Image 1 (cartoon, rainbow, N blue to C red):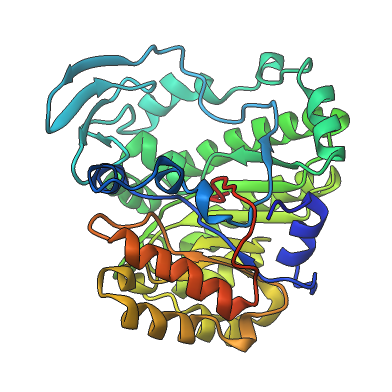
Image 2 (image 1 turned 120 degrees about the horizontal axis):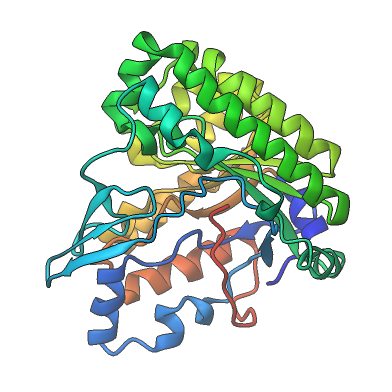
Length: 371
C-alpha cells in the first residue's frame, strides 16, 4: 500500500493509524537477483513490486549538504571479479562484485590538519548548493503526500570518508580540534542549506548515514557521541525542526544498541536497519526505550536461509505486541541474502502479512525504504 506522508510520520511517531507497516528496506543483493533470474523468477518479483509492499513515496530535497569536490570519478578497470576506480574524493577504490555493493577506499585524502585545510572548501556553503527552481515542484509533491527528506553528512561517516576508520578513531584522541572543525564546517553548510530549502518547501525528515558499528559494537562509544555527535546533530536538527521536520532518521548497520541512549539525547527518533545478528533485539530495545525511538527493520534476514520453520520462529518473536500500533516499520534488517530461495521469500512475505493482519492481495508496488 502507498502511504501518505502524514500517515507515515504519524506511524513513526507512535500513533495508531489502524494498520501495521510491512516493508522491504533495501531489496535483494545483486548476486541474488541473478540467482533468481537464472531460476526463472518473474522480473516483477526480482524488482520487489509483485509483493505489494507498504511504502511512502519520498523525494530528496533539492539541496546538497555534502562534499562538492569538483573531482570527476574515473573507472580504471572493470574485471569479472572486481572494479577499480578513482572516486569523487580522489580515492582509489575497489569493488568486489560477488560480496559487496559499495566500493572500498584504498587510500584517503586526509591524514592530518594540513590535509583537512586543503580540502575544507569541499564543505563550504555556496548558493549553488540549492536548486531553487526545483523547490516549488517539490512543495507541490509534498502537498500531494510525498515525504520530503534532506540528507546531511554523518558525524562518523563523513570524517571516516576523509580519514578512514583507523585514522578517524586515532584523531578522536590526537586531533580532536580537527574533528570539531570538520563537524562545525559541515553544520554551518547544512544549516544554511536547510534554511534555504525550508523557506520554499517544508522538510519532513532529516536523514543521516553513519554505518558506524559491527557485530562487536559501535566504533564510537558514549563519550565520543557526546563530544562529537551531540553538538553537530542538535544544531542541524534544531534547524530542520524549524522548517517542519518531525523525523530524524539514522542508517547504521551492526550493533548500535550500546549507544542508543546517547543518540536519542542527540535528537534521533528513528533508526534502521537494526540487525539482530549485530546484537540488536528490537523487542528488548522497545521495552527499554519505549516510545523514544522508531525502529525500521529488525527482522533477521538470515532466517530466510534456514527454511520456512526458521522464518516462522523469527516472525513469531519479532512481531511482538509491544512493537505494534505505531513506532515500528517491520522489515528485513538489510538486503535479502544471496542463496535465499524464492519459495522461502514468498513464504516470508505471506506469513508476515497474515500475522500483521494485512491483505494478501495488496496492489503491486515497492520503493526502497532505507531513509
